Length: 605
Ligand SMILES: [Zn+2]
Image (cartoon, rainbow, N blue to C red; front, side):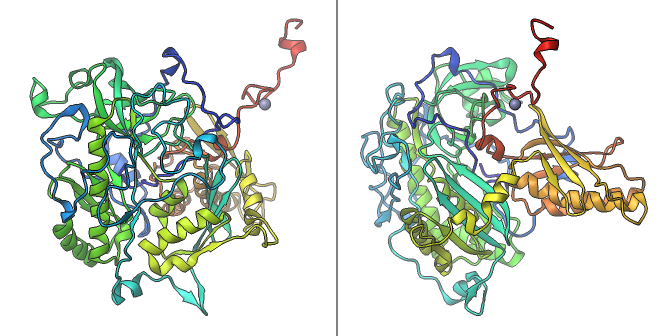
C-alpha cells in the first residue's frame, strides 16, 4: 500500500449489466486463481533490481515503507489486546464506530466532516441509500457475517485551515495573464455505466481510469476487511481468506504479520501454517484488486493514506518522501517529531511539500481517528466484514495526485464537482479555482469531445500504434506477459539503415512509455526493438526509454538489451488494464483471434 507506486486507482472489470450483484457462488466457485506475487517478474538479485529501477522525477508519491521489525501489537483482529491508550493529536475520537450499525463517521470530534456517498445518479440500486448503508450491498449482506456500517474516510475538517503566506505562495499554481498554467488537465466524465477519469498532459491523453458504480466487488483496493481464513496452502505459501466478496482473497506468506510470542520456533522465517490456521479471524487490507480469475491480494499491514501522510497503525515506520528536497525534508521531520503518535508509523508524502504544520497535524489526527474507528469496528464485527471502505475513485485520484501542475480539473457532474471542489478547497485552497464544472446543458460539446479524449481513448485500444515517421508498434497480450514489436516504416529515408532504425527505435521508445501508462499495462513486458548494430545506439534507445518511463508514476524496471535485442521490463499495476476494463472476450473466436476453417479442421475436414 505504501510503496512508491501507490496510486490507489485501478480500472475495474466489467460488471454484470443489470446492476445487481451477482449471487454469491458456491464454495467451490469461490476459490480464485492465485494473484501474482510481488516477487513475480523480479530479478533474482537485488543488485539487478536496483540497476533496473527507473528513478522518478520530483513529482510523485511516497517512498516505500522501510522494512521495520514486525509490530508487536497488531490491531483488533483476533481479539488481541495490548494496544494501549491512544494519544495521537490529543483528540477525543476512538469511541465512535463499533458494531452498532450506526453512523460510523459521525462520532469523531471537532466537527470533522464526513463525505457524502451515493446519489449522483449513478446506476446500481445498491448505490443509493446515502449514509445509512450496510457493509455489504444487497445480495451479499446475507452471507456476510456483519452488517455494521464500514468506516469511511473523513477527508477534511469542517473548520478551514489557516495557511500562512509563505506556504500559500509556494503552493499556488503558476499563472500567466490570469490563466492557470500547468502541464496536466484532469477531465472527469460521469456516465450512466461508469465514471471515467482522464489525465491529459498538454493535449495528449496519458491516463484513463474507469470506475464502475458501487464497486464493492472488483474495486476494493485499499479497503480493510475482517477476514476469515478459509484454508492455508503450505505448498503455495499462501492462505485463502474469506472477506465477503464473491471470490476468496489471497494472503501470501510475506504479507502475514505475527507476534513473536505466538510462535514456538524463534528466529528464521515463519511458515504460513505456523502463523495462520483455518477459521482464524484476521484484519487485512486489499493491496491488489481481483482481476479476472485471480483473487484479491491482501496484506496484514494496514496503511491508511491521507492527503499529506500515510498512517501505518501500530508500526515503527517513519519516513519522508525521498522526492522532496533536503531542506524541506528537514522541516517536515521536525513537524513529524511533534505530531507523530508514538505507537503508529507515519510516512510523509510528496504532497506535504510546503504544507503547514497545522495541516499535517490535522491529517495525522484524522487518520488516527479513522484507525481508532476501524479498530473498534474490527473488535465488534463478525467476520467476514468490510471494515473500512476507500472513498470514490475520483476523490482518491485527487487525494493521490493533485498538485500545482494541474491547470484544471473539469467535471461534468454537478454533485461530484461540488464534492471535489469542497475537498480541494479544504486541502489545497489555492488550487480550488482550478476545479471547474462542465455543464452539459449549456456546453456545445460533451466533455470528452471538448478535450479530444474520445478518439485518443479509441486509439488506445488498437493493436497497432503508428509512429511519427511511419514505423509502428504492435502490442500483443498473453497470459504471462505483454509483447511489443517495433517495426520500421516503408520509408527508409536517405541516411544509412542503422540511422533509420535508430531514429525509429527512439520514436518507439517514447511512444511505448506513453502507451504503457495510457493502457495501464502491467506485469512483465518484452519489447522487440528493431536490431541495431552499434552499441552506443542501443544504449541510447534504452536511456531514452528510461527517461520517458520516469514520467510514469507507476514503478517500472528496465533491464539491459538482451543478446537477441529484446528489452525486458516490469511495470507494477493495480488495475487490470484499460482494454480489459472497456471490453470483453470475443465470443466468435473465444479470444484466439482467428476463426478456424470448419472445412479443414471441423467434423467434415
Ligand atoms: Zn474474435
